[in-house]
Length: 433
Image 1 (cartoon, helix red, strand yellow):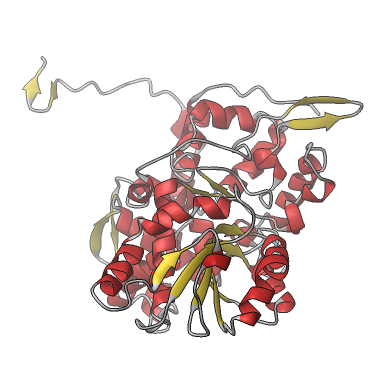
Image 2 (cartoon, rainbow, N blue to C red; image 1 turned 135 degrees about the vertical axis):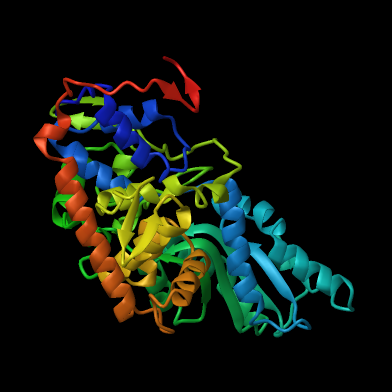
């Protein structure tokens, strides 16, 4: 399968500008280009759409996401009850890595300090040797992990290591706290463990889910699935069940600072590809085991460019740094607030649920609710977060205006070099004549 040599030109630079913010600048443009060159030229535009649904979670973002979920969990547990956090599975697994960022979340510190001032100061702890802990039926067990894909690892660990101990202690309050859980993984856990586990995590769908395809708004979900199969089936992995959809056919598009789950599509993390009887290098976008760190994750979501890639793909980015009249009001769409509002409204119009919206935009439910709140104040959403007549009218007019601008900008004569060019004689108030 022939690789592509991409020419560095203005068109490619523009594409990089749309894709890199979605990846939170965690990789260099060169690395993104090398990964795109794995694909045949005619497939690259579709692969760029796939990246617009990719979710990269750096260390700091993992920490505040854990904090959000822990804060929700603690509201269900009385101050007088003991909480024991357990990273499940064997030593060295990613669940043990989660212990440090969890301890440093505001939610953990606040809850710990509240108990420290009471007689319940020993009622909030974590343990690597759970069998040595003194627990009773009022203890709440919280298993922690960074990511739950198919749910197989948790189900196996629970049945083999913890189930008998929990039963013997008479414990009935058991939780699973994670940054992200795939919906299919949660379903498997509910089925295998008889809904005995309370899950606190951001939910994500298989990106090729037939009922809720993430890419339906781009109207290319079938072609994307076909292209993933075309390349993914030949990626070398440690086990056949990883390809082409990731372990457990999870169809995930997720990577962390410390590594990429094997549930993520192998075209993202594979390093070799079979071509006939030989093998060739496959340049991974995010290898399975990564070591990079990024400290400014949350700030990227406050940047205009974070939403520009999505708006560009939805053809609603024509108003960047452009003042125009809409409903008799002069508007200049150059603020992140405007972009995030428009993106959410467009997805609402296209019947995206909250999970799909968060997955496509790479935001949390809490961040989505903040945007909802703004839209409710503008009367664009009602109290049930449904588009109002005013919101629908506004979005329809915006889309009409965008199509008009696109038509004008894409006319052939607009790409021709003007014979008579205007050269200013002054700049910034300084006369150059």
